[in-house]
Image (cartoon, rainbow, N blue to C red; front, side):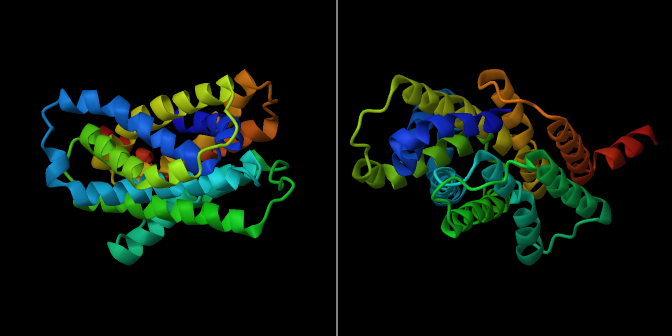
Length: 280
């Protein structure tokens, strides 16, 4: 739900702030929100012990993909960008096979395929280029999803046992430090509007700080591949938020696509198999 709303916030903020300044402020504000919670926890020393992997996660799971997707949103429609974003579980599966030698069951492969099909149905008729769209924007979006796929496994391998709050705080702090010089260099010449600032604040607090606490908790409990399937649900909620706040029409193909995505996610997560084991 929170990541689905981020597409609305970026749609408002990116044209006025620019992709680099928007994301630099996004991760900086998110880090400022997380630090008081982290300092009040019992994990205050974890940042020093895991500084290098947290910096890697901050760059590969926040700074780099955030900027690339914000850049892509300037020339690609939201539907097309959401469809690109749905390739994260596929990249995560590929990285898992090549790096960790993970094997997916036929049921999980079917789930991944259904997720992509559902994404196609959901965005059918909206997958168009804005004026000025280019292949470079598509490549940027795919590179962002590859970075997500890698970082989900990397976080599980290098930060196992570290509290999700500590990982979220450390990664956003490292991302903010890495982007600080570029944020200053690409600061917008025109003052952004109040709506753009509101979108930025909501993007940083809800769709970043809170969302990443939840996401790293998922990685700790489910693993990188299964946790990455939440990306299938992003366009579903993005369409819902668009209908509520922007007056966008939710069509029958959107409902059908959302249903297919839910089934595909359930198969990829192995929910049906877990239910049978519990009954036995």
